[in-house]
Length: 636
Image: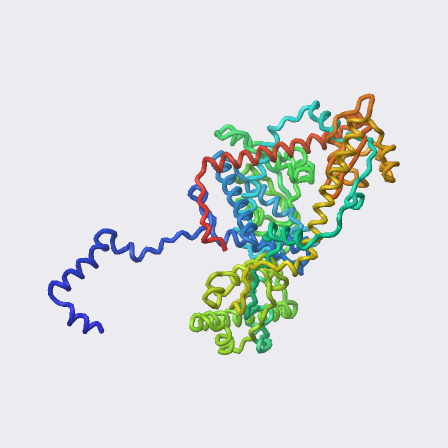
């Protein structure tokens, strides 16, 4: 073919073609045709990028949280909606905005504080003590690296610091506390009767003409939703059966290749005395060192280390416990602190050590040597991992083959499945907005209602709905949105017309009642007797009273205070429910009944409320002044 072209295109024709082809390269350069610099972020905040992996990790963390709250079998399909993903991305953007602003303001998290936070997390503890092996296991189970977790913890801490600064700036006066308590604890006494749809008579008969007219006017309310039925192939690593069981030799080899994993590293039970450096000049440095040396000397002279720590240590988190830091292993603390600690013998006290946050005097109270778990103890764990690994390998292999088959047979899922001996399953009809079971996953419904899937009957791309769990589908039948017939919905139409009639009749009844009760001054009791209604009497109830209808309470607490006469009103709770109420007394809460602890709790509540509002305003300010680029196409 190329030879034929060369032979045909000669002379001036060839020259013209060469010039045409060369022109784009001359104008834009060769590199523009090979440029792979494609934006691979879901959001860019200033110069910092939030990657799809960052968003996926945040979504997985939220899923893990909800599983802990709702149970392992909870339906978490709501996590896959575009709205939910965008909300999570917005939180990541807010966190990055706050992090950048904190960095610019010079707000940092010292290593000692990060260490204290990690040591205090219950999930990382065994028998009440921090355990490095447990720490790494928990991170691995949640798909996190140590560096990534600690970075996110720093970001969370910085954000909390900013929030705390805003809270500290929220001055809550005693007068504000008193006003809040008077409203919060206010009680009201009232009587009421409720009018409902059943209290009025209407014309129940609905003629064919009336039904047709209503149906024509409200036809959009009686549509049959768009539906699809699909064939699908599901591949889930957890459901793949390993072809064989691991041998002892294979497990022994795996054990040896991961030997460090089964080693509990050397640990030191440590205490310390921290002396802060109050300033950045040489005099402040010398003063801090002298204070640390004095503390060491007191211990050398026979004072208990714990007592000296309580007296002079600047580490608020450990000073009250005599400087106790618990069991530490390598990689947790400041490098200089760690080096000194792991050089000490049990019971020895270090000279002052300069760390990132001051001078430390360190006591190594006990030493736990490194310990390795024997093969027999971890054999079952290794076997389970070996099996899961084989499942994942099988998943990767078969999913890759399925992709190849779908590419080769874009309009026949059955042919692709047959080639790989996979089962093709068929769904029931389901709607775009909701489906039970597997298709509760929004990404599957989105793929099923895609134009290519419906109009061109194309097999979908693989849809990953969870790690090592994907689905490929093809639409078998599509039912477009269409109006239902009047015959199908006649009962609904009749009920709707009757409901409108009843609501209108009830409104007229309520307005007449308002005229008598409010304008005419009749008592609620006399009207209740006439209507054969039982009066509901509520004495000194608060606005959150559990034994009253919250809708009624909301309306009652909107009424003005009664004077010599009760305040009467008739209000709508719903089109089919009205409330006639007679408010007789209002009593404000008494701030004098609160002890200091209760007042402090109110102060904290108000402070948190205002800090939350101010923090939201602070984020809005940052959003307005820092460029943010959201890359919708990269949202997974």
